[in-house]
Length: 105
Image (cartoon, rainbow, N blue to C red; front, side, top):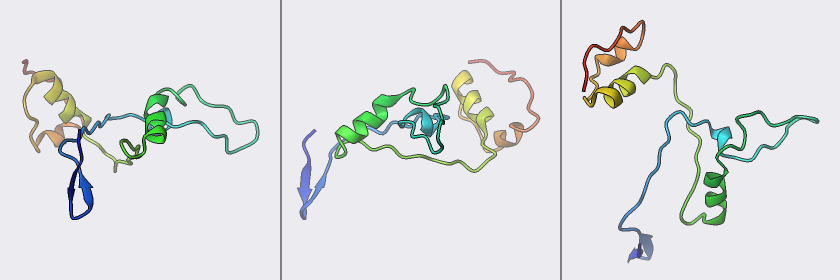
């Protein structure tokens, strides 16, 4: 990947964006106790490669937390993944007190 230069600002021709849905931020960053005697939970420090890459190559990688406004509509995503169809806006309403998915891929 070779950077282009336009007006002194380096630009890339390609980029890879990785978004991991439902990944807890504290899975990826080192645990720092805030109280004396605090120990890491089982979910802390489980995916250190993301933090290590961001620290070792800050020009190539960064790690950002995202906080979603609840409620999220997981059913839409699952329906799209399992049936291969595109979920519609109306499917968001099905997320609440939903029923079984009747269609198949």
